[in-house]
Image (cartoon, rainbow, N blue to C red; front, side, top):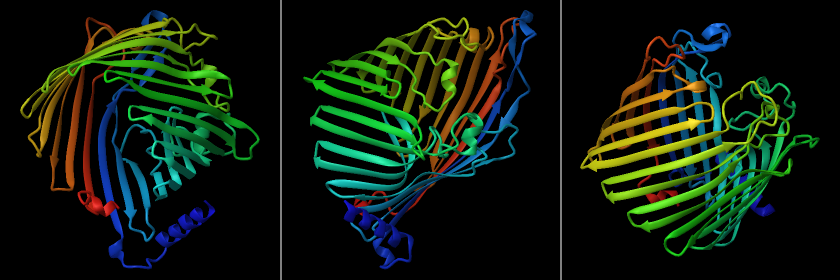
Length: 466
């Protein structure tokens, strides 16, 4: 392993320094996504004297944001060492004259990924900035991942490095994170973890993960978590799945679920699931004070395929929240259960596609009734265009008063050559109230324009990646 690490480090120096061989042996692919948005939002303000002295949220004048995002994906291989590649996903941000402070618009540059990877038939090494997705959630770190494959159906991994804040590429002790959680320790963190993946049969897989996060001076534990998930096929019609994670430091279970999907026929499948949700928080965080309550429930769903061009789906979910363990001004009189119903369908006729869905929620925090309908035209291998409509009503805490919000918009996509593509999405929301009711005003416009391009090594030439 030490010799392999020296090989990876030497390869990194060669890749970073002047090229020792002909550039023709190297391949680089660039993929860019440029996105500009125009978003109208209505800030809200709590007025304790409104609504018959019981308090209400009132809408302020419309404000707008115009965020600009540039993603650049770089992949390079053929660097003189078999199995070595370099990869980076970089993001640039700007705000184009916005009234509002768009989230992270002041972070003008960010490296989401940036690593060197050396892959051989039995092992893989990845050094640099990485993100991991598992039953524990999403975690980013700057460090090393090492994977060993002693068998085709078995993979053992270990990883570690400088930890990054959850849902962010900021360090754990950055000023941006500290402004949101002022009692957070002013030290960075070290993230360490291990996982095992196994596939005992073609229709079964299992994964187990263990992870610890420590303060950089090892003076305290930030989190200690474990997760497990599995999937087993029984015969040719039944699939059983289960997952669970645990907060080892607090000695309590977090999220857990078990489900069964039965293929009644090629045209009909049904699925049932039982689940529990309890949020897991860092030991250093103050957010546990705000009473993140656990809930449990069950769901059932079905998918019916009438033909290749016509299908239907539906589902029902029930959730029950545990009683409040402590008083919270944010969770007063919100109920302790929720029922959710979803219905959907899709129909295709040649180049035309029609999608419809309906969603109903009753219970915890408020009720919502919403429907969506869209139609699209997409000639084979060419441009596409569509129209989209929506309507929804909300009551109680998340209300749009006693009226209805209607939305009308459209989408458009067209290739500008083999490696260029332009797409746009426009939506206008109109809030129509009933009577003289008051509440948050939902009248607003959303626009997004995206330019997608690729240059460098041809993705169609599979051999170029080997």
